[in-house]
Amino acid sequence: MSNQRTEIASLGEFGLIDRLTKNNEIKQSSTILSIGDDAAVIDHGGMQTVISTDLLIEGIHFDLSYTPLKHLGYKSVVVNISDIYAMNATPTQIVLSIAISNKFSVEALDEFYEGVYAACEKYNVDLVGGDTTTSQRGFVISVTAIGEVAQNKFVKRDGAKPNDLICVSGDLGAAFLGLTILERERKIFEQTGAQPDLENQTYIVGRMLKPEARKDVVDYFAEHNIMPTSMMDISDGLSSELLHICKQSNVGCVLHEEKIPFNEDMKDFAYKLELDPTACALSGGEDYELLFTISQADYEKINENNGLSVIGYITEASEGKNIITRGGNKHELVAQGWNHLK
Ligand code: ADP
Ligand code: MG
Image (cartoon, rainbow, N blue to C red; front, side, top):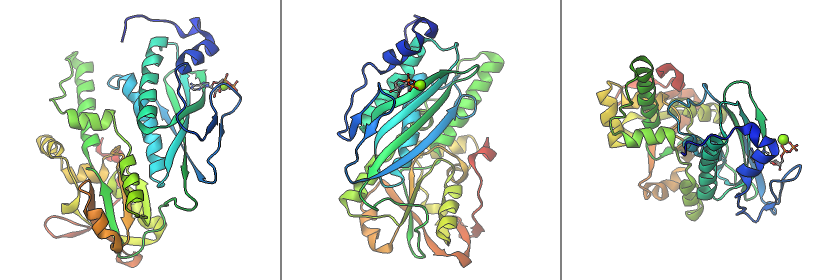
């Protein structure tokens, strides 16, 4: 970042919007009208439209002391379109609104938008509008993602059936450890002024600061003709998400601890911090992997993909919601959001 500091007031609201959106490129043919009018116009040509929104508040959802603005812009888009993929849909447009205090310079916002545009480029979505306003304190970001899906091909949380297999993409728990290191170093810095030591944990810190949405998984479903019976993204811990699927589908589950996928660096670092990797996966948040169920007939298709793991199966509701530990013991699966680990 350059050392230049341009006050937002020197550009004015329209000057600022102009500057932030002047290089905006439209990629989707469904975008009929983009930034510059009272509203955007989208034509999904007979497809169904999927919409999801998220509000991100400084100090609650992100901490600017260790979150680079470019990463924050990127993540703000990614966490939203992750919800669209979780519906088995394709994100096509976003609208992004910001409230900013005068502590922000124009250059800081340029950096934030660099991340926004990088995510739009990577996931092939168009930024088609937003709103810009001031806040007395703190940075507020609202992103609404819009996507498309073929008629009735969207996947909800309520379709899991007994004997379906429970599957997850990627590996779990690393983002929580990334947050743990960043929070630890922030406290040390505040108390001693010591420079952060992230112990070369690039993977786990990256999982927290620069998550990706699982477009590839939804593409894999389409290529292999797989229709999950239920699906959601993992923004809280695995246990609370799986309990949502069970509740909404009115079923029970058996989760096998030994099947939960971990990254090797993540496991080593969890042990170093004397944390249980399983607890990080069950109760840590922000992994943005996909949790889904499939009928047993699709097992081979899922098993062929090394990036997907079968971690358990669905039961009748009367059998409860359980986890079988490595030692073979059965415990009730309890909902712990990631907050209790903080
Ligand atoms: P209005 O008066 O209708 O709120 P604005 O003057 O706020 O309109 O916005 C003008 C145009 O710029 C609109 O198309 C709006 O969607 C877009 N816009 C405003 N703020 C942003 C932003 N932060 N990012 C992207 N587009 C924006
Ligand atoms: Mg406006």
